[in-house]
Image 1 (cartoon, rainbow, N blue to C red):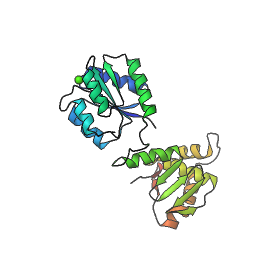
Image 2: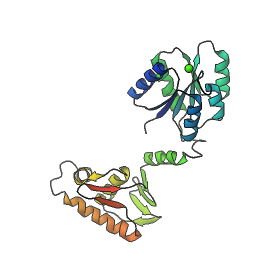
Image 3: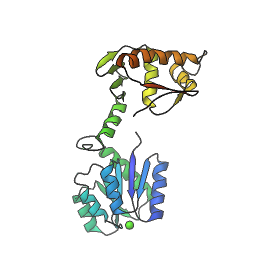
Image 4: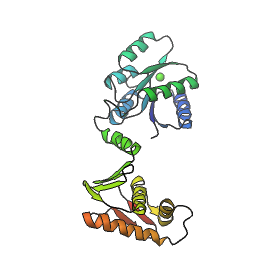
Length: 243
Ligand code: CA
């Protein structure tokens, strides 16, 4: 999973600079320049890390940190002014995992970010107890090779598929195709894409092979459990919708 970092900084140029550097490092970034908005964002979402400036409009960073609770569900690195010793102490007391003194070299910030992400992984002990718990579960599932759609569970490692706990026996190709659908939910997959993913690039044959497998899957899953899982998108291909 791509770590998602929230930057809370009202100096736009600095925020933008840090954002670009983090994106360049491969992180997903959300930005906020207001303490109150940041508190709302951090309450509604779980971030892998929050970079939190102290001097902010709306609500200052220390207050945001306090209101997030200790430990907060997302780890926080404070951005503090040089010599603001009390800020650093209060910040660490309030649960920040680290602080960076402004102005900082971007290499230092990136290094601290890497360390914080490593030492304080979100989704382990204590976090994800509320609204975002399901997201953490999904991430853990994905790492374990478990894919879900409603009551259907595909376990890659055990090579097992169940619906409401009832086992479904699939051939390898059917299993692979179902996996492609489950890992691409809400994306319309063309016959060519499915063929390539399930049979490999060098498959020579008719794309209607895909229709055949879809029919097999429907007869083993949709028809047996009286559901509508794989939908046909006329003229394009097939899709499994998450909702
Ligand atoms: Ca500021």
